[in-house]
Length: 414
Image (cartoon, rainbow, N blue to C red):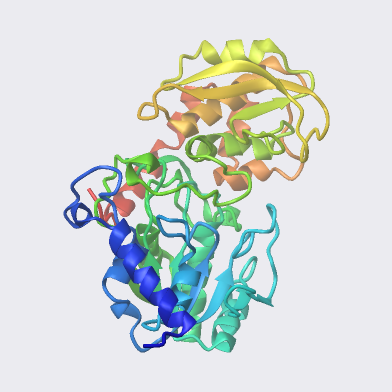
């Protein structure tokens, strides 16, 4: 019997999916492959959640199977799902854009599907894009890194809000929080500081998966809830780091090359709000920090604090782009010693405090971007007043406790 190319690809997809989701995955037994993502469970269920709908997918290069095929390519080849559109976030659907960029509107060469740009779009303009695309259901599948200021969770929020305005259903396919879901840490955003690096009052390290966040957004923050379905993972535990999943790591953005980057990011990204390099333009972004004029005293000062799970090495580097491009700067490199003990937010605060103490050139960015990253003026003003790490961390505990109580209602995994 003659098979069309699409049917042949679909048959190959099903065979591969069966091979890469072992029997142990359903029961949660085994190790590397005990986890099944939301997409894997969607396929295993025959796309029943999407039956009869014209579907559009919000995704980026992280939306892949275990054998690193993109879910858009897989779904397009499968007659059981009617995929009609793709929506790209910051960096784009295929990931060609750097930070602060996107790919615009185009037709995907691989599938012929129309790709719409969602970056920096929200509300009615984004709802109009969903309407124009002709979709009935918007599906979201992007790998997050667990930090409030990583923009994909606000793409999630904006798309949920726009789907509600457009009368569309919204489906979230879950993936692991790579830095575990053990808990929430750091300051909680104050609403007057809301931007695309923080739309709503959640903590700096939220400790949730995207499906859990979607449920929280829908009930706590959206003016009107969207028709929401979440396809949860099986076999994921809140204490799991990404490596336990057995999934390939695809950088969610150009400066998130490894899972170690993701682990430190919710703390060291605060250096975007200073005149120091946060390591962009190096092979270890957010693990290398520095500036011209900094020497060994910074590493010595922060090592004296004996922060759990991390050591600091005096380091020198020359960024190829971004701050200090082409100049040799001094600073520190973070070396993780015990992931389970490491607290990225406390560590980030300690690094800010000690950098200001040992380097006379320390300055906040002139637009006070640090306030957008931390969610209020509190961190900046306390450090400027000479507060130490413990004092700064203690100041947000009341608001954090309130968020933890809200967060607990939406946790789907143990």
